[in-house]
Image 1 (cartoon, rainbow, N blue to C red):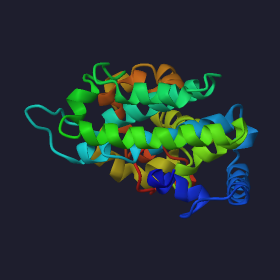
Image 2 (tube, helix red, strand yellow):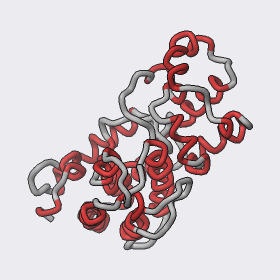
Image 3 (cartoon, rainbow, N blue to C red):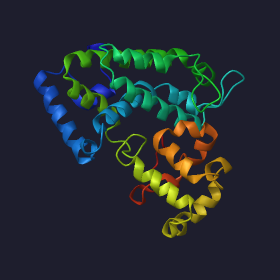
Length: 264
């Protein structure tokens, strides 16, 4: 397993070959952090934390970022924030479902989903080939290395400990993304602000919101539908509409306004 050591593994078990004692100590600290953040108070909270951690490790924090930061070409479609928002949230939901399976090879199900080059991304007008052209080999190598690491530890750990291990890659990142305990608070804040009910927000962020521009018509046409989709399946709003929400303070609880990481 030494050749597969990466940031996700180091974040929970250290740089060196871990002993069982090292792993249990690290898992204990991780459990404490998850408890502090409220993951054990919500239904399937640990499973959601693991799903988000898997997506960050296998997908989000990888070569796809190079494609995301690169200009489009005649062959590669622009991979803007809304497309990433749709893709990241959809993959998080798929990872959550995969983690609910009893299949002993379930990490490889996630690998298949991530690396499928032909499936049109839900909410987007393109495939992995369309958006990742020029980076496909690196994306494949990255995903396979991390899936191998995950499969190794899934065999080594108890089911609950594996979920704790899988959640580690997002430690230190935002805790109010889709699937996390504070996501419903974010969505309710956005719905309230879209209804024009949060006067304090509009006083503080009015200039910034003016620069961002008005919400797309598809977002405001039925605010209850928008609220439900943001809460349960953001990708169904479509990448273009989600692009308006990315980096937008309207989808932040008051205590996290000003954060520098886009949603999704």
